[in-house]
Length: 164
Image (cartoon, rainbow, N blue to C red; front, side, top):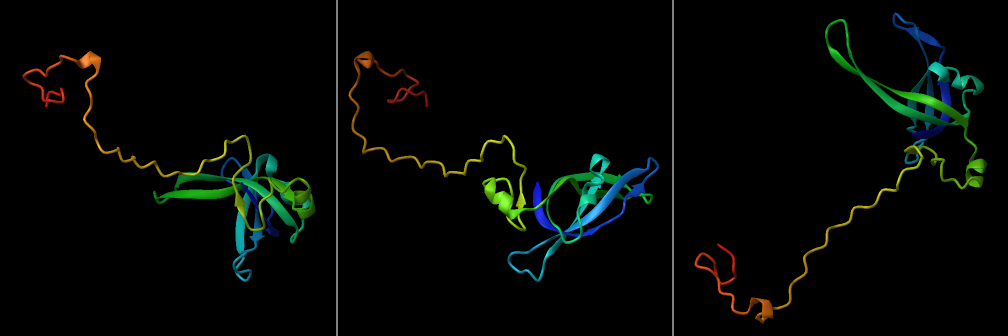
């Protein structure tokens, strides 16, 4: 997924756990188009090869952050099971509205918008209401076909030829 916003704050590289897992947190300020007084502040985490993604950017820079959502279950020392979720950033680019328009604007979300990843996905088809059964024309007596001439229902069959 992609999101556009301003780099609000970037943290230092931190380590966690016995194995020394390294990560870095940063916050993107996303403009609320309905009410700019109430912007959203979205915390992201970068780790592994993405650890230094924000090094080349300054607070206040307009960015496009590409990320995925990760969630894990964890049992704390008190024995309580908790769900831990983070937004894992794996690519950051400077947002350039002119470049987005030059490229057709199709792959860049609007300001403050969230977007599913682009790729070779078939477009979703809209749900369509099933067709209602059509009324049959007023019934007319059927003429027996040549194949059914002389057929008479058996003792256990009704006039329509069905056993019930």
